[in-house]
Image 1 (cartoon, one colour):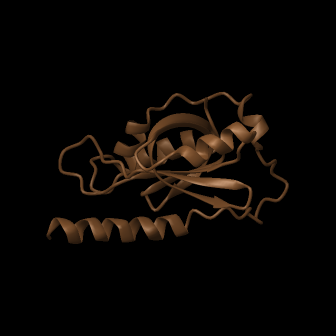
Image 2 (tube, rainbow, N blue to C red):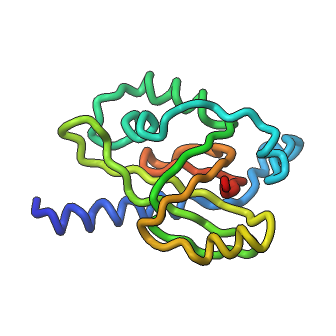
Length: 164
């Protein structure tokens, strides 16, 4: 397969994954408390390197389903703080969807890519100005609540905030 076609295929797969990264509340458990952006600053941060997450979930990697399940159990419902490069930012209502650049596994022979999608609620005008100035390739640090992993291609953080 040529490289251009391969990259297009990866982008199509990522597009499907992003579609699954919706932010609608789950009606199955309405009594569960919703974490707010204000609660993020008080939540303990789980210390897991973003590269370990990428290596675990990336398609074509050497990690097993048991290892992915264990990491998912540790991550989902936890708060993380990671630095990554921005691919794109879109505004959705009062929040900004910050998507990382596609990240590759550190293991040789993998073919998949992985991204972080963070739904950032600005705390003040300074956050808004920072978000407006970020460009593709800019580095950003975001702290957020892990909602889940979408199709082994993206991890969703919501709510999330800029770390400055």
